[in-house]
Length: 394
Image (cartoon, rainbow, N blue to C red):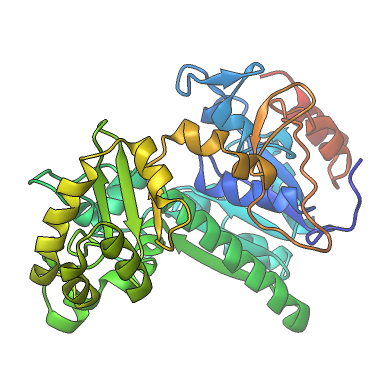
């Protein structure tokens, strides 16, 4: 049993979303005490349940489902049916938050949009997650993570600093996760403001705009020069010796991640290349290129393991380029609780939001499709005929 003293205790969330952005946000709310009710179409339930689509499983569930849906309740409702819609409207009258990720216009066609629901519950906070937002010329374009990242200009600058490689797929779904966290931020702002006004709000979050909003440190050439960046002249795209990736003798990689003067001095004095210190302390671009060439040659002289020994105790911002498994196996990840096992030995991603008071209390139980339908329906103001219609087998 969880201690009720958590940040979001007493908040009820209706989650209509699928896949990653919405479910990740609502799972974080569940971890911190919210009651999250997952609305699933019994004929087309949450896709991440499927081991065919998401083949890596643990303990009989997909790893993806286990790490986006824990601690939620599931109610099976067909929102295109009269009974299902009635049940959802009754739920929405009592809820604090609705999260949906339909394509723009779908919620309105179903009659479950913000205008409809807020007319019956003025305290409701309604968050719509979409690829490009609820308005604008791109609103109806279908897209998932990679397409929105491409549209935002980020794939164009995500290339190897060596050679002429084309755009690279980013190894984490940044549009999904950035939009998830912005959705959570918007919901929490609206909940806070509701304490003063007594009224909820509509939160419109787009994956595309979440990536745009994450770009202030790379916008210099666009805003200041009205041009696309020339990658090898920009500090974060490969034009800075101290923000770069270098291959080692065993075809592993070392990443340098900080260009403050003290780091520059420590690196180049340690490598017997003090002549590069002055240029590398200056702006990215041509002045750094000789130093980058020097470092590429130097790093290829030793294995990654040897470099890890060399860097130990030196005041330099660096890291080996870990594999995903190396990162998640690390003592640091385990000690901080970002990876933990439940009582059945299944792995979970921990909560990255930490409080000294009222910390997350993670419920690792996973909802079966419609497992709580009967219990939740019993709480609602519905006729017996409506209840029978909702509960009848599909």
